[in-house]
Image 1 (tube, rainbow, N blue to C red):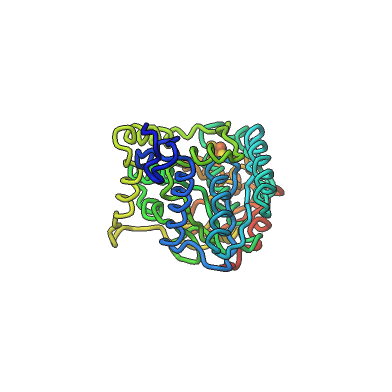
Image 2: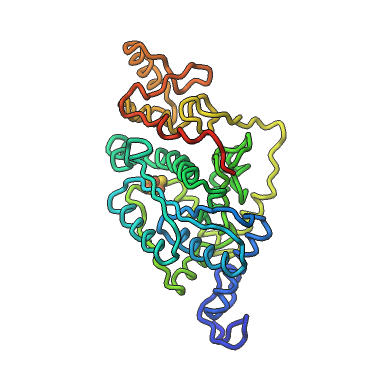
Length: 370
Ligand code: SF4
């Protein structure tokens, strides 16, 4: 490594930037990293003065760096934003309970309000309980679907204009490749967008979400957190099989070793993809049970909850013909109509089950605050 920083040409270089391969001193690296995020925020028009922004905070490196940098840039450049921390407690003992302790310390360190919503309160089930009945194969499907809605619910509760998430360049490159490999055109179309959601017929979240770290490399986020001595939690989720993303991640890391710009190149390629106008996309509507966005009569979360509550935890996962028949038989006996898997069917809410949280869960999701 050259002994002098390529940027200030005075101080000793202490690190090599993974993004450019250049040797920087700590101070110049901090400046460059923060300025690049500021440029993303300004060039992409992520926020408007006066907006309230919820930072989705998990206690991990990405969201901790996001909270730190957002607070710093908001003050340095007078964005005029009101920042709050929003955390979701999935109910994973030994993982989320510990990471939330980090978020609580961050709340004090950054002097920001914090709200924590739990899966148990919202859905009647914690991830520990879900894993007990579904095992470790499909648990992330439940967790991902529930989290998407939980963040919206928290944002509505806080009456925020936007949610800022800690997705970084590596996450986005992985998602682009995963969607290409799966042929998931609907997701491919939206996964490169820096702002998603809001009151738009093609969107699937109530409150707009943005990704200020979209162009920040994971390695640089780690370096920034390390040299800034930020307080973050670095343990992996105990229920993290996620084999498919893991394979894509390994593949991208291999590519990055050969060509350091691979991550940003994948993002730029994804941004240039144009979906044919005659490509059939799902139409969004509102779930007839909980009012959340859905491409079907009943949203995925309601289907999954119904499956859990009725002892058919695989309902809504993969091919469900057999389960659909089982449910139909069950409902016939209970004089209930089949509700969840058919667009044209008349839905019966699982509120007939005492564990149902559908109506309670989204009773406030009738207006978009933005
Ligand atoms: Fe949830 Fe799966 Fe992520 Fe764990 S790895 S937090 S179970 S989505």
